[in-house]
Length: 434
Image 1 (cartoon, rainbow, N blue to C red):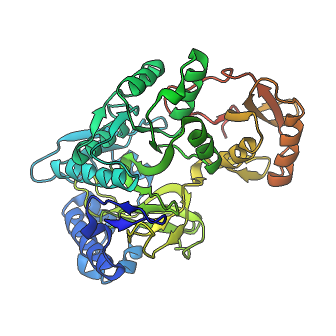
Image 2: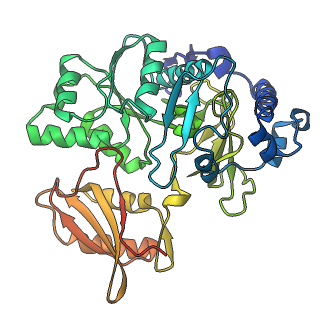
Image 3: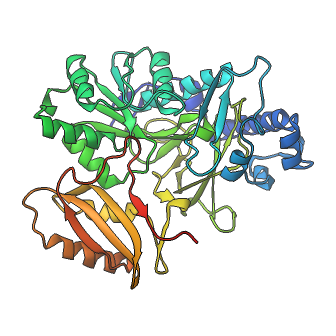
């Protein structure tokens, strides 16, 4: 047991690993970097990618930067198993991305990969204050999407009770939460908005719930949205990160100290690079997250460019006692950047501004299209009944001051914007593709 920033004891799943001093942790990282290179070089496709690099060439963790980047397009082109590295006992599971733009990214799991996934997820649960006495309701989907299974395996490793509802059926979700006394919500980041909305429409009393923790991921969500969810659901939220390519959720999570997301460095090696040049950036400076897996067998990643925008906050021991480095919450994605009349911006910047106004959001869409006068930008945002219509003019002025944008801002009635079955769609780009 260790002390949190508030002084309360905090349990860890593997305290001997989670509290390793920086020198010992970096020795372990180096050892696993070399083991990863040994494993992948045995496969012709990887050997061609890496050229003549050998494990002995990596003398310190910084030498890892000499290796080439791996991109999403390369993983797509390798579909189904071009860059996979089958373990001695073969594969036990397949998960994959949606593949909305080209081939999906397929990730095969060995038995060791499934066990590793459960381990990092159990660590993540405990970092969020979840214990074996909790009841975890999983609302992320089960299937090819990684979310549901990751939450499930971690809770089982922890010994907590699981309610594996999966996605959808929101009114049933609320009833089960109430009747089974669920204490932990596991979901994609915007699903709590749907729970709150359905509760309002159906007259469901949210105060009847026993929820105290919500572990949310899969989508970028702002501090402003976090505050809304915590206020309306009366929970403490935790931001969990991960992706299909890395094996699903469990790459890292923020703790009760809430001063950055712990990355489990004994399993994943993070770097922050300049998204244009690929050069490393100093700690504290924003850039693109690059991830290497150090223990995954089925689909090892060597310097994978995630497109996620963040920064290293600290490599010092956290108030919770953990020593893994902490990165900032994901602030956007390089491939989600919107370019409009020469102005570059992220949807999250618009979201933060909207949620700064009482009665607006959190449901909104940024619509780009063309008319006879050229490109047009419209921000659609749901507003609570009775909101002063002049707020749209104030939002427009603030967007002009902050981002040099002059969109049309339309207030919509609650429920008017279409709800996607999975991740929320924040940008609708109807402009002709060039």
